[in-house]
Image 1 (tube, rainbow over the protein chains, first blue to last red):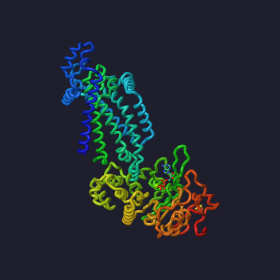
Image 2 (cartoon, rainbow over the protein chains, first blue to last red):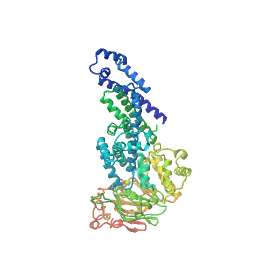
Image 3 (cartoon, chains in turn yellow, blue):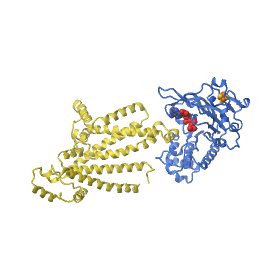
Image 4 (cartoon, protein in one colour):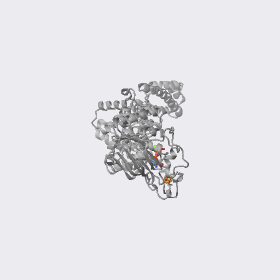
Length: 311
Length: 324
Ligand SMILES: Nc1ncnc2c1ncn2[C@@H]1O[C@H](COP(=O)(O)OP(=O)(O)OP(=O)(O)O)[C@@H](O)[C@H]1O
Ligand code: SF4
Ligand SMILES: [Mg+2]
């Protein structure tokens, strides 16, 4: 198992280097001279040249990348062009917000999609409900769902705050209240897609002979479902979670924007709007590394669950 | 011990006409004996055994008949009551040992699950000891070590032994084996069959052995039921089936040289094909292929009747000596 983990890691690390390099090269390449951008379009060539020399923007791209990567490894991402704050200081408070949102939504989505779709009682009803929700969750855009939820639960009913974010230490209850609608919005999408993946796999596993063997032992339908079908049928969901969680690490852009949540997603959107490329690079790299790491974790989880992979 | 009367199992998806995979089967299995069931592919052998276990894949269901077992009618039991029967009083093993076991769980865990299902109080240590004991009984070498193996670490023959160990872990009165050796190498087949026979002698369980292989039947079965198109054509003692077959279909299967010494092989081909369930002849289902058929044979299905002590035949014109 440890050997397996190390081998996967040995594969992930060079990938991270190559991909962040590509990200670095394209971000700076697309956006043109950073100096011109920092100084505005009417800056004098002399001023631009001076800035280029000071920040090393004239150096070969590889040198620039190594300088940036060296800093990134020590948590130093440079300063934001628009706020002049250190990028690390902007990311530090946003990261946990995004992670919390993502974890709640994914966790809820996994537990409910797998749990509900494994039930053996009232299969028809559960199936119809979960299919209905899946279609709604996957097809309705997040901003629409978010706005609808705000209208119903905050504006009409007044049960929940409309937008914003309150940290844990300013009141757990208030924190949770602000969390509910954005989590539900994100959850709706993931519940839908996880349900579809799980149900398809469930139907395939259900037909396998070992499931009939389990029933022939005298197990109840529910025990067969949860002990024998679920562990196999959940495997592709875990792979899928690895992918989506990685993407979510970079922030749920739309949901964070609709609910004014100070997470990475909103930071990213703002950075794009103002060509704030140190911030874009930093958040982009976090997404990249996040996808790689959560995929790795998913692979390890799969290996742990499936004795045939344990090489 | 097991007496099936008029069993009819149908597949009826909503809106479609019902198809009877098993249509009026009468069968008996005596305590401690082995009943071999033979018949061409699709004649309903597997569906019959799944009916007894009440494990029919939907939309299959038992539409009529009784399955009398130890004084109860299995067809009338509630699901909860039926779970007490499955695994504990009737166990089943299947054709494909490679896919019979859950690939994600150790064989020890799977055997333990079978035991615990019917003995809630068993402790972990107890379960392990009984698991090792079960593996030892099916002659798996080093059972203390193999119990922690996963299915993919075992060969097909070993897995079928594990299946047998698991099936016998609760000492059932009846074991249903649906082509248990078809997927195995010839030498392994013989070992598994020997094992089954020895275990039967040890435990006194009855066995229903479904097979295509007349050699297996000759070697294992005390009695044989020959099925054709969802019905029993003939049931008799093994010697009678091979030496004195009375149904024209049985005769055909044996290639009309019904000598047990004549190296019984695979089922021999008979002219024509089995009629599909939606195009059954009104009378005897074998009539289109039967060399003895006459006009009477198409009027009504022939009932299964005693023709000699312990020999029941569903043919108007049996015993065949009279015809020949
Ligand atoms: N799931 C199903 N849905 C509808 N019909 C089925 C289903 N399973 C089996 N049948 C029908 O039941 C009939 C009997 O099938 P069964 O599997 O019992 O045959 P068998 O005698 O075991 O054949 P084989 O020797 O190939 O295993 C088949 O002809 C088929 O038409
Ligand atoms: S009843 Fe008639 S058709 Fe059927 S097996 Fe007997 S002789 Fe043949
Ligand atoms: Mg079969």
